[in-house]
Image (tube, rainbow over all chains, first blue to last red; front, side):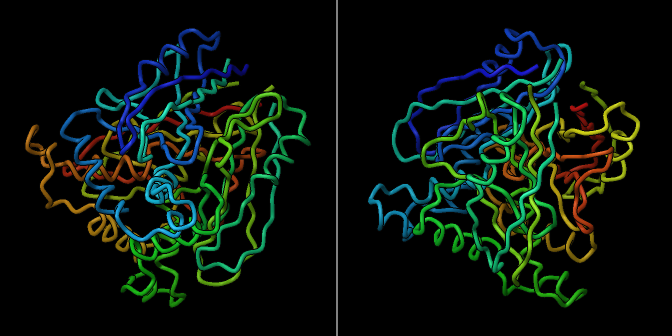
Length: 138
Length: 138
Length: 138
């Protein structure tokens, strides 16, 4: 069985991190599937999906790590060509990854206690984001 | 239902990025599955799979980011032991990731308009690459 | 069909890399599924799953790359708030990723010859780790 569901969020961009664990859990709960996997997929090329302990100190650490690893203020050829200033957003999103697959049994995701599912919006402006939750199982 | 398909590409290595979106779409189209997920998996330890906006400026930015993050010209113990000079290729491929799972409905992948599926060949020489597209659904 | 299995490992933390390829292969073999995908998922927020050539030189290179990219001895707000000194562990695990999906046919994973599945424990102390292997197929 396959059920395809969507989550929509609004973000401020600039590496804003949104905890979507509860939203994904609800989609699994509302589906007719008891055991399986949920593939969480960020539609678009400047956002990524990850798991992380959703805690304010760590959110700051995660953002500053990306600022250091893939700085916004470097010379990106993407920015020269398109003028939208979000070359770093694309590179970060590709490295973090757009898909995450989470197992669940009896409708409960097998996450750790301090392990949340997040969408990281690396774009340099506010965005509406669509996230697909593709649920497969029995 | 499960269908296992292969894509074969030739690359020049050295972080060459190949857009395989159309190839993956064709495999889904040729399958008997309407709704589900496609797991795109790079066979081998020096290539990775990602989504990115396939645009020439960004391709240069992506490559130069990897050159900065995991430089080729550092001292790698892998190179000392094996003499093949591709220690950086292995590290980059592991960080980027070898598998990507993409949802689709009515045979259409739920990608953004500027979101392509790519294989990044980090090896330091031309390679023939096998990519598995494992399609699961109904 | 869905089968949910668990692997338990003991690690010393500090980016210890455990080859779990044989363990995942055994779970697929013991299952009743011939063709499909295995989602390998690290429970917890300080470990990641990847593929890599499991070779001692490269293990050292992989660890030193993370030490350089996301150093342990920086000022992490997570450490200030929680005092456990593992801010870097969380950031590394999120970037590497907690889930990997591997295709298999006739019970054989479609890995390259030098491509192993590993769990990287980034925490700063010994840990017992639970890894879910969610097997889906027919």
